[in-house]
Length: 109
Image (cartoon, rainbow, N blue to C red; front, side):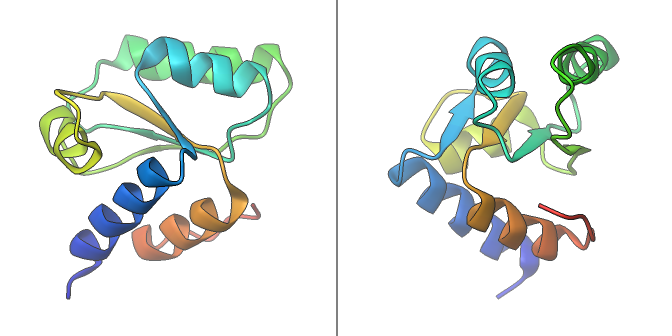
């Protein structure tokens, strides 16, 4: 099983556990409420969206890692059972840590 397949599986588990917010408004709300542990942005999302998320984190003095992943909006949406998702937040530290490991990033979560 590849890391991408594992990541899809983890994202599906997050959705079923209700520990994920997808879409701009839900993700911004999770960041503002300090529920988000990790923010993932699709590869085909606009720079404006990415910059807006960075600004939101700075505004509330949040240290949520924002990672641009290699998956498209359609691919993220497919593993969540949604149409498309340009941005999602993982609202659980355990899931966020596992996703960081699969992506190959080393951050403190």
